[in-house]
Image 1: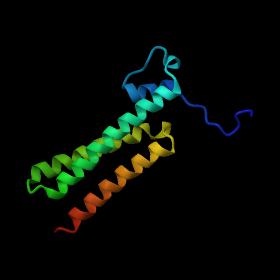
Image 2: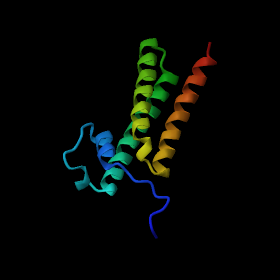
Image 3: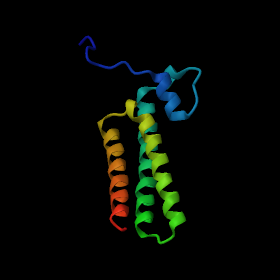
Length: 112
């Protein structure tokens, strides 16, 4: 009723994390819009991570393997920058990305 327990969201910081720049009027963007953008970005980063992990497992080219591992880490860092603004479903995507990367790296360690 009084909003106790609800964390105040810094829409300016959220908008900057989503759009990559500080908006002049971040309050003109609704939380629903920011959440939708966040979901879209997380889905894209997760897709890249999952595809890259698959390529790492199947390629025999060491340069491709290294490049895709780096790409996974870059996209996970991008996801982590959004984490403080995420709802539970969005946080689950980040966990899925972390798990995919860990499984990929675990598989590489057991090849040698």
